[in-house]
Length: 152
Image 1 (tube, rainbow, N blue to C red):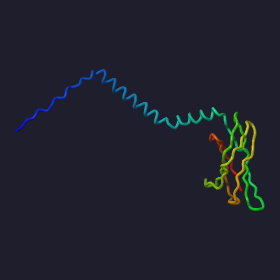
Image 2: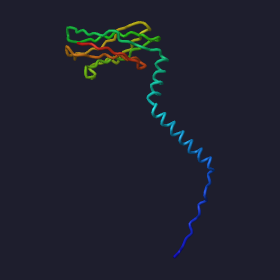
Image 3: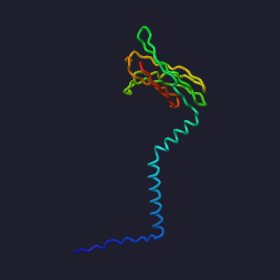
Image 4: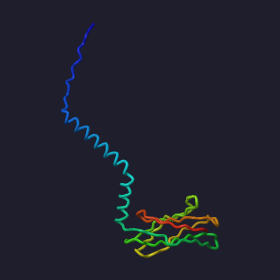
């Protein structure tokens, strides 16, 4: 029987205090990772809020209504007021039915509204049902939005 000797691996001695320090550091890092993962939504909210505060942009749809011309084209009018401290540029408006489905939109807008002023935004469609509820949502170039509801 051939007996081979296995090479000996030298034992590395870690001083007890360094081992405890390494374990403690690992535990602290793990706790920090858990805290960050749990708070990601809060962190994202703070980042979004900071952007909002930097632009001082705030809008409100103060009135919305509809009218129909003789050809059957329905125009939705949303009066948007800038209640912020900086100019707001309206870039899109959407009309949703009571189930949240998009019925019509106007995405080619560039309506600049100075602070304190209100301007109309228009959406046109042929597809509204009398007696149904609809929601109009208006968006700015930085993502601020406001909505109103109307019954056709």
